[in-house]
Image 1 (cartoon, rainbow, N blue to C red):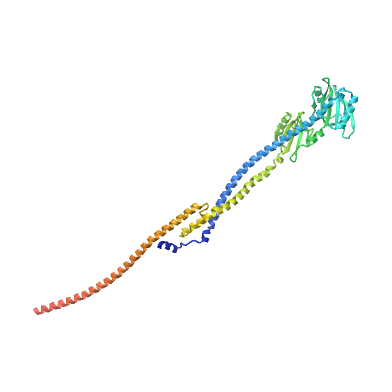
Image 2: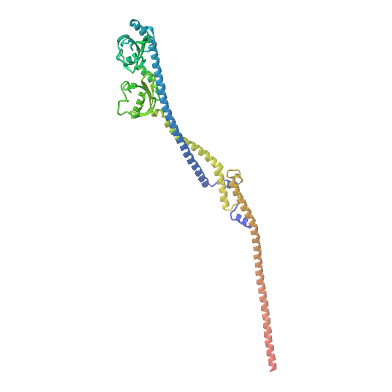
Length: 452
């Protein structure tokens, strides 16, 4: 194959194993950067969007959970306080139902009251009043000095209600015996279906405040209680308890807080968000059963939604970390599955471009780029075959041409010899003719002379 051999002489040579495995670095780097870059951008964008949506949903869910938790705590705490007070009322009702209390005998009633105060220690004072408001009482003071007292309580609001047949847990009042704020639990004393008096007991407001103080939420959240007119009767701040009324006072009170307090005094439950002393707060509230009170649980928003900051950090770091891991795995897979094979295929095509047709690579046939590799190999094989076939024909033509040239050279040489030979013959013939002409002229001259 003259032409094919000439291609080899011009630089087409067999490819060694090291040449097959050699990948052009610039090409490999370029395709790696592009593929991995596109994948990273797509992953980060997709994961960021997904994380953002998850964050929004999680934030909404966490906010709803925080609000619901505060509201639920308020409801459960108000019920607990209500049940505790109802238990106290049931105890007073049981005393009012005794024959001794119904007898109205003050001489016997007072020792009985003293024994009950000392025995159960559930009340600061127990007292009994007739239908005119005249009462006798027994009080166990903080100094543990017991005292008895008499007086009239017909001016008390709860007295009038009890005389109408209601059992009452009063709003806080100043005790007539201790001059301290107390809550009065009073029930009617009935005899033969007729109300003959009142049986009551007082609970120091501090004791009730201690029970309310056990309601805690987050780090600084606390509970408070307001009565029917909006006045705060229990609060952790002594400057607020029994003094402040944010429903009716304070022009700088957040309207949202005022609205929530209005709902509280109307016996509703719910949750509100407001600003109090420049602090964003949640408040859950619910009515205290059995009394005209409402209990609220308030907590700074940031304390119950503090997880959001961590969630925010996680929501933004997660896509970056996941993208980094996936990109690394993708990079390795691309390198093994695509980049190296494509690089080797490109290297093979580069050598084909320089004229080397012995570059078919069978190691890539089973790979993901096997179809294009097989196609390239087929092209190379066909090209080599075509070139080989054409080389035979061209070789025959070339040989014929060479033979023709040799014959022409031979013909040229023979022609020259023939011309030289013919010229020599012509020159000899010319000399002979010239001699004959001279002989003819001499003969004619001789004949002519003789004739004369």
